Image (cartoon, rainbow, N blue to C red; front, side):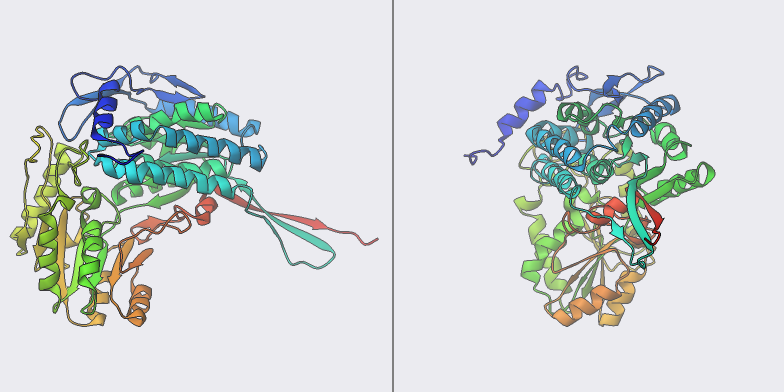
Length: 517
């Protein structure tokens, strides 16, 4: 029996039916239009595209296919709203209260938002219910509460001058977010952008637009003025490109692939040199030393490697393990994979722990990495191909959890971001060798270190070239800690924490000369 307050499978199934997201027809209930100036509107062209459930292959919704014309309209509205001061000049306490109400409304709609991300992204519903949506709420509350608690500065001048250092909203922010954590990644950017007084044009991934579109209705209910939050769904080559190249967008925040990040940066250079903040890919190492507590570490190691179907930029996809403990660790991981902790199945079921690949094309891409690893001499010790879930789910693209031993850093599977449940295992003998292997990558987003030696933990953590290093766990910190990467994992700025506010603000010096009496 479920605990009081716990959402049951029956409630989930009933909500799916009510939202008409079972795949029997295109939903007439779920909103798929753009949200501009506080209203849901069709794309200027009238064009739409369909969204499918990756676990079943069934079409579930119709979404407005926005392009340059829609982006132009949204930016014009955002600019007018920003210049009016209705949001940017609002008293900090008032802006805070509105965003806190927005957070409460998101929390009240947890079940619907969790289902939207599950049926569009193939993410297991338990992760959305227990992780993504609550984390989204907490993120928004954190930044809302910070609004009236951050002070500007007075420079240490002499008595004849007053140097005021103030921060102001950058203006109109274009935010482009990915499909792997649709709601949460949107909020990582929306929360600090709105908290600092900006107006926003949000472009969700074309594969996962529905939860972002739902935010428009909740924003209205919360009292966010029309024009502050605008949402333009559409394809990256049209809507996304229009956002990154727009001459009247002051800042562009992007989370996604390194390849697309380069295009966003190039578009900024070729347009108005708008500020760009990029959170890109990763090829994160997990280093397990010979003195690590394997029993307590294995669950974290598995989560780093396979959480969210490994469709995660901070995925710990390279397991660099000391030769003396490798056999024991791999044996423990094999045992875990065989349990209910890592069931691959229909993501709408609470019993599933791993969902489907996002698209058939992405599934083929991951399978090609598996084939490449075999061809280059890696040893597949578990998994290695498509599977059919035991729950009878049909029509989706599921890949079994896959582990390769005897991988080298020069292999394609160890160099490139697979974004699928494929773990590369490499062994080492010395600490120097482990650090060297960990840093042999063009990425630098995250890393994990497992050791019971506190001196080694600190020493190695400092030597790893990555923006986030967790010790004896897999973690990205919480809302108080910045998230972002080194090298080709990121460019300017950080998500989360008070440092996130900096990328959405301009800093201004106001210098007063004070005449003597």
